Amino acid sequence: MHHEVSLIATVAVSFVFAAVCGYLADRLRLPPLVGYLVAGILMGPFTPGFIADGALASQLAEMGVILLMFGVGLHFSASELLAVRGIAVPGAVAQIVLATVLGVGLASLWGWGIGAGLVLGLSLSVASTVVLLKALEERNLVNSANGRVAVGWLIVEDLAMVLALVLLPALAEILGAQGTSAAGQAAAGGMPLALTIAITLLKVGAFAVMAIFLGPKVVPWLLTLVARTGSQELFTLSVLAIALGIAFGATEIFGVSFALGAFFAGVVMSESNLSHRAAADSLPLQNAFSVLFFISVGMLFDPSILLREPMAVLGALALIIFGKSLIAFCIVLLLRFPVGMGLTVAASLAQIGEFSFILAGLGVTLGLLPREGQDIILAGAILSITINPLVFLAAEGLENGIHRRWPVFFTSYGKKREDVLARELGDIRAINEERNRQHQLRMQQLIDTFPLFAQVDEHAQEELLLLFKPKSASPGERIIRIGDRGDGMYFIASGAVEVQLDSEPVRLEPGAFFGEMALLSGGRRTADVVAIDFCEFLVLDRRDFNVFMSRHPTLRAAVSTMARERAEMNTLRRNPDRTSGAA
Ligand code: CMP
Image 1 (cartoon, helix red, strand yellow):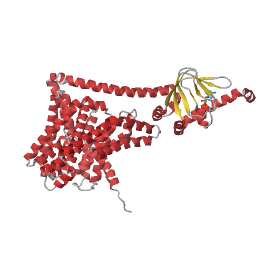
Image 2 (image 1 turned 30 degrees about the horizontal axis):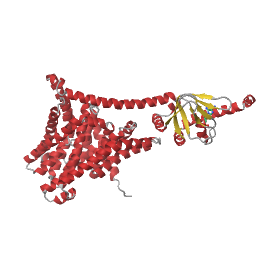
Image 3 (image 1 turned 45 degrees about the vertical axis):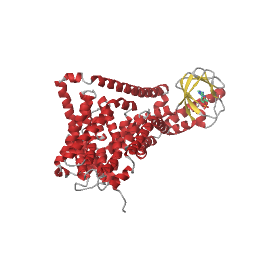
Image 4 (image 1 turned 30 degrees about the vertical axis):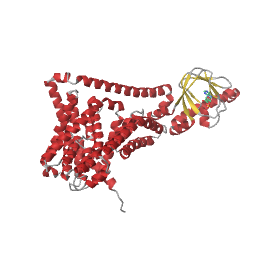
């Protein structure tokens, strides 16, 4: 039997190679991602042995980027993004412009034209999100102010690249790149440049408006809706559907990158109380697929470029590691932020990745960039990613050095702005933590008031919080009327009620429940229930009761036992003779 298994082969071999090489890298005290890159090179077309499907690998890598960016978004609130805009926007824009100028300069040294220089410069000016996040994660910096600034900076870079990708075809046309102006024209749609820019900005703007205004309303609502079904599987599926769906939609409809779409999907989801569950659910996939990103980078790499164009590779590498970081460092200082932040941002950006490949690929198709330009960019990427941990070490060393030698520089320069930013981020975090705390508190209160719910796991308790509808009653109000059909089960959070039985009323207090008998039997209400105080109830309606109880048989059994005891008690009270008879 012959059938197509290249996807399975690619995934399987990638995981096996990555696991082995990652482990070996760890033994050699290298970061595992170096192992993943080597695994990619081994699986690529430029080395003997197994050759994986490059196109598939790069798509899988894109999944990795999507999931990873989604994960970051989940831990990043929209307000945090706004808080760092004062440094991220001017910083990223200035850095892209300056690094591109350097790229053009470098290319002119090699005798390349302005078009090739621009593509090279742009490719070298954007850092890889995946690499940055891994680096920050390893150093526990993602949640620090410096980490927030670095990620914000990268988001702006990503946004700028959306524009760059649209402008390249137009540029190719203007420069009349040989042989491919037809491709350029097709990509630009034969539109005037100003119109292309306007449409792109409009699309990005429309996406931003949707993400900021519509998303926070729709996405948490959707998640709650699904969480109420109580199905774990459906919940995880929905989280992934939302992440990948928004990423894909963002690309198809608004022309922004997958990564950016996924990031905003995460940001939007972070507004929900269920975001921690979404994060936990998507983490394993995120880890697995981000490994595939490094593999696919490795696969593209042709090691022979190191022999063919060693000086060019070194030049590009120097621009990435020294040029770009120096520019970023200076910009941070010029914006009057402190040295420590400058060094972290500089080290974070001293590498290139996914966007560079996309830009370089497009540059070659449009006839702007010579083929070896792409190889040089790839070599620059792979080397800068590998060296990045060393750059971080060097930055730390430098920071300590400066600290020792010029302590004033640390205590005074940029302190004011950093403090303001840190305070702002701190306030935002405090608000988010308070929201989480409130949520936890509600969960705790639920179990404290109703020990019955200690029998089910945390997810089910969370689900109950979503299912419950609050209801209140004043003294004397009848909550349940005998003979009615059962519409819900009531849990008393505060106050007290009386179950009016023929014999003598029974008083129920906070922590007790009523209204279960009609729901269990499917029959009519067996008694009147009247509030004798101001009451707060949590009500589980009939449909939710049925679904929830069928999923949690132990709880159903406990409630049924209570209902049976009550029924027996009522029968006995109605016919007291039967007691003596039985006794
Ligand atoms: P249901 O029959 O749906 O509506 C009336 C509710 O009163 C009933 O469910 C029980 O929850 C509650 N009830 C009936 N008998 C007793 C009892 N003996 N003690 C406490 N609660 C009762």
